[in-house]
Length: 419
Ligand SMILES: [Zn+2]
Image (cartoon, rainbow, N blue to C red):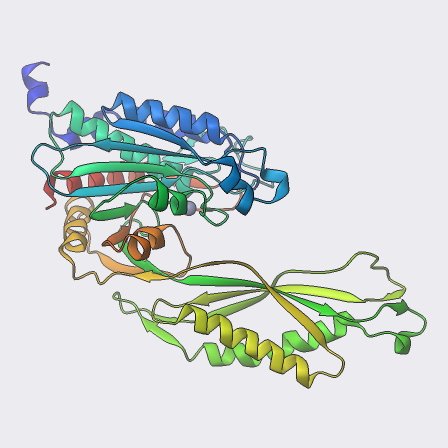
């Protein structure tokens, strides 16, 4: 190392290696880890394990046992193994451990992308385009460069570091972060889930969800004799109208987020709806179904929220003549919230302010992410922060190079200042 390099700070290294950040992100985006169904997990986790090992971390790559996977995956996905990667780096003299987590799966693609392939990773006027750039391979690239910067600048982190890259966040995380906290032997003291908060916002919690499917059972008949059947579509429509009353009562359930936002409980009706087999223009529909996406606030009782919704549906169906329904749970995720008064949150806010020179706010996300597994399952202070981006889950998803660089410096700053 030259004399000048001896004075190099992690931030200097990051500034000089922004091309590496772009390259690394494009390399990750080029592996289409589309979920569902969960493709190319083996390829990307092998690459990520190599990268962590190259940075000096003891690295393990876990393949979720097939028997366990078979219990939670739909039959068409059982040939697609689930993997999680864990890296650990000891810090001299450190008694405590900080865990960084990102999911590497991405949602499916559709539509026409400005730069051709959604897996190209094209750079254009300060933005990098591709599925996963914002959600959340940009976070992975940022963390990898932050660790590399510490190594190059010969600065040790003040805490032991654990890094996990996990599967299936875009479905239910059970074989990803859910598997990791139960089976990988991790025991961190603090966690950063690298999404949920971005730029000046630090995420200290998120909503939970209950996803239900309501099936309406009618009776099919010839369309020329509607009176001979029970029209499941019409019953479903009446039920959907009744749910407007439920939505109004939800709007009165509130949660005050630390940034001053008032959050309200919500239910989105009919994200997916349809008819059974045999539907035809001249047939009275014998079956109809629709989904409900109930967002559960951090202050709410999760099981109670589900119970209330099911009771409302049953009562509403009773009031509609000949309306017979059954309700099943598609999936659920639990809310979490940590008070940002904990010193860990103050340290993150200070890192964000030092790098971005802007005021910070503590927010609660309406969407869920994997923070729950660390905050509620491991019961440790957990925050959400990453580079983020725009058009997540949509056409032309992209991440800003400026935000990627800032986030890299923020991770490096946190690692070298906390506690
Ligand atoms: Zn995500």
